[in-house]
Length: 419
Ligand SMILES: Nc1nc2c(ncn2[C@@H]2O[C@H](COP(=O)(O)OP(=O)(O)OP(=O)(O)O)[C@@H](O)[C@H]2O)c(=O)[nH]1
Ligand SMILES: [Mg+2]
View (cartoon, rainbow, N blue to C red):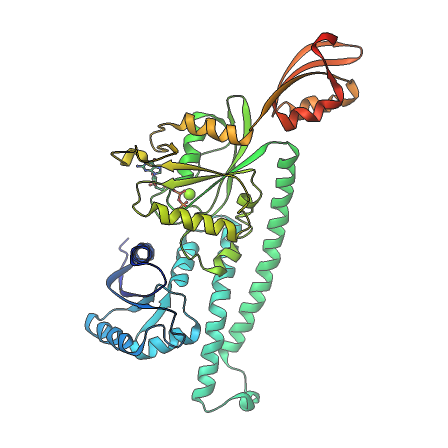
């Protein structure tokens, strides 16, 4: 299949960012364009203390953009910054071609990559919410062109207003359907939480290697379920996957989540909030960092901010530097360094995960009456339990494991001398 690339100009206003960070964001935007089959033939930028609310660029820069569009004969202009409907239309009127912003790019990528029903519906809803004000605005423009206005409304309804109503209806339907999926997910979660197993969520910037990390553990530990999708592209994962991992006799749930990106559009944060519940509900977040990326420190900041934004800012984080196989020298890195690709140092990473998940361990003897025998089954997954003896009083057990689980048996504790 031949995919025709369209030529575009990438434009951006640098507000407050320092030049290095802004360059990283623009480079990333070029990668987003490429993911949408758009070829960036030129970039044009302006620094400003705040965004010009009328046309993003000031007059001189806008003229420069118009000349570039004419000279390079591009299909349209992509703006890094979020544009209001009115701003996009004003820029488009001057530049003489269509103008879209980065949110539209991300929405396009999400639409083409969504696989699960939930991701598809969430993406469709975000798209409709993004398109709706644009549609209504074009309505107003046509009204203006016809010399009409509020007083002229009775003259008949315009097509776009009818379409807008359809959009609104569809948004309502999608919300209902997503709610149903969400309550099913919550039921699954409740079932999972009953098992007492802790939850670990992999989080981090898109393309850092979260899914590869999960697959490496699936291959090298006792794990339930198949490998997850991993690929060298932005937003390879749009759905949360969960696998039960057993390592060193300890079992926990591991969640793979959607990757973050700088200035993630608010519509998308909202739309994917429930997908990100896995991170919000986790006992531990494992942040995967692509340390071979020159901008990894900035991306770590983005991850930190996004976690705060989705309400996961208080959960303990274990940071793991990934892709060390691509580095010549790792001596300056302080922390856990792994390669999810070839499995280097994954044992160390697992030990650290377990250490954070179960900070203190204890042991205890107890005499569990038969009436409480269900506790034996319930806690077997999270504690090491040896049966010392069984008699008419109950089961004498030796328990070893995380303190909080051990304390659930306090009532039945016996001293070694009572054995
Ligand atoms: N060289 C090297 N490449 C890696 C390593 N880990 C992952 N990769 C590659 O990095 C790319 C992205 O990996 P993924 O696991 O899909 O990344 P992700 O964080 O899940 O990305 P999103 O789902 O988009 O958020 C793939 O091409 C992987 O093969 C590693 O340790 N070393
Ligand atoms: Mg992934």
